[in-house]
Length: 316
Image 1 (cartoon, rainbow, N blue to C red):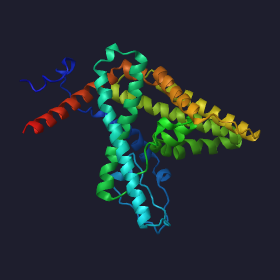
Image 2: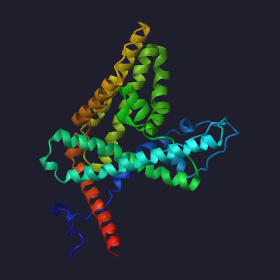
Image 3: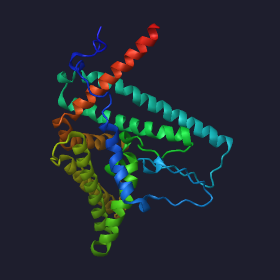
Image 4: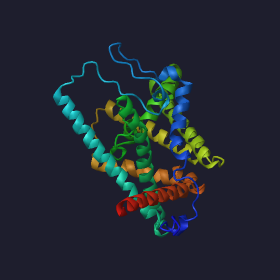
């Protein structure tokens, strides 16, 4: 019997690599480019009493070494807390990884699903997939070199505002790169002419514009299709909204108004806005160029192969 006979019919003739070589690297290339172009800005000063981490590929990977505090107390209680934290993070990671299975399974019947549901699945798949790739990159460094990696994501689905989502929760590695290379220099350049508040807005808009252009490069790298600039407008829109949000917060603070939406309301509003604007501007280029189908096909083939391996070992 053909080894692919257990696969869905639409994937039986699938003959490309199981994992698309462009998919993991699309996240690393922009980070690597920024790091190679501006290495002095990314070197974090460390007190001389701290041990220097080994150099090598870690330096150019899209990850940061977590520097422990020189005053950290390495007591038994601290170690116990750290073990519990690692265990909790591992459980959450396993749950997220397990969620990919039903998501990919649902894709087989995506023709019967409404487009908003499919795009919502794409959002979940994008977040979980990128986080798994980054975690898989950081794990060997942690095991081999004994170094702790900086957190890449901080539960973005719990964001209570766009500022919280982009600045503190989503893809923190890129945030830490863009802050010293784009945001701070633009603010420093425009502050003498525009003032503190307007230069802040210029820094935010420039940062999101650069992020949008880098995503256009990523999309071109994956699809080889000419850019249509929707994803750039997605980031420009979010940059404008983040800047407006900060202006409103500062105005309310000056008037000593402590009004704030409860997180039960602000969280779904934030994630809803990201999801709706993503469906409008972020995903069209992906869907139009068939990148979504390529990733879906590869995931299904991967899961089929893994399932076959388990069945073979179970029968022996």
